[in-house]
Length: 70
Image (cartoon, rainbow, N blue to C red; front, side, top):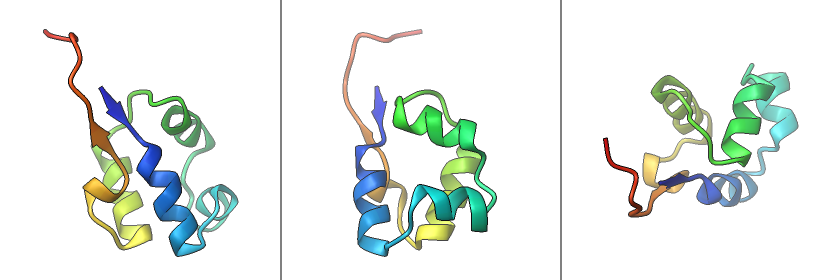
């Protein structure tokens, strides 16, 4: 399972709000909703967030083991 709890912490540290993301950086509100719900997000969205926040992937997401196997 991927969780995006660190994203919100990193945004707070960088003083970038959700409003800033969709207003100034053109991040889709539906993408933000999926992030809030720890849903599926495309890698280009993760890349965009890392560029906006000037951070690494591990600063916005964490992997937790679960029984979700293919």
